Image: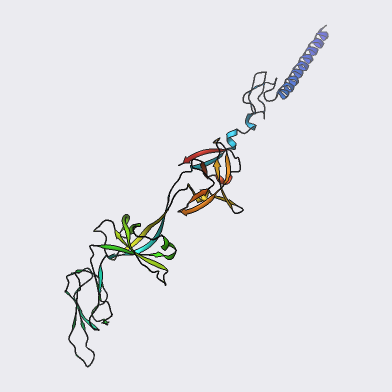
Length: 337
């Protein structure tokens, strides 16, 4: 009897084990068949992306992590709205600060400088003694020749000193009116066609690097210097300023032509293919771009006129264009006007 009971118990244990194994296999099969968003399976899908909830395998977020979002395909760009914008051209050159009126003084006769009575910066009145010249030579004796100031003003240049030998054609002193100053500058031959009286210039002096003094052209030389290939221009300051002194070195930014009537764009935004220049323009949908053939005009400081191919109000891509193609989807990170 006891042996029979033991057999029954063993059979019951075996049946329980077989039933448990069958249940596990069935559950695993249901999980695999359910997949992401499918029926059955209580575990999260390994690659389906949604999180399975409960026995129904309800998947949140169709497609899961394996599908890129639409925004991931957008190309970030900066744009500029096409507007009629003038471009101001200019010429950079240098010049010297000089009195508006000055006179070079010459001796009446040649000889050796016996004495000098003035220094640079000395104010002299008309008729004042500037220096004396001894015209004597070995074996001869002549009276000293006195050099007088022909006008009243300030000595701006002293070109000789005691002991120098001069001739009647040697300029020994320059006298000028330092209360009225001008700038004499040279403009390269390639820019002379843009010169005219009244053009404005910004003058910067070494002594005052952060200060800008405004001047205007009052005279233009009628000839081009054959050796330097430049034309001389004279500018006068719009306002008197006691800080400006004759003899100072000037940096001159002379404003010449103004180019107007067209939108402008940074030169870096212009692409070229097989000799054709083009840019990318944002389409009416605001989300895609088209390639647009353009023609260009004058350029200044990295900006160039767009003379054809773009209408005012359109948005032109100025950064990020190297990653674009016809119809590319974009995201504007910033826009300019």
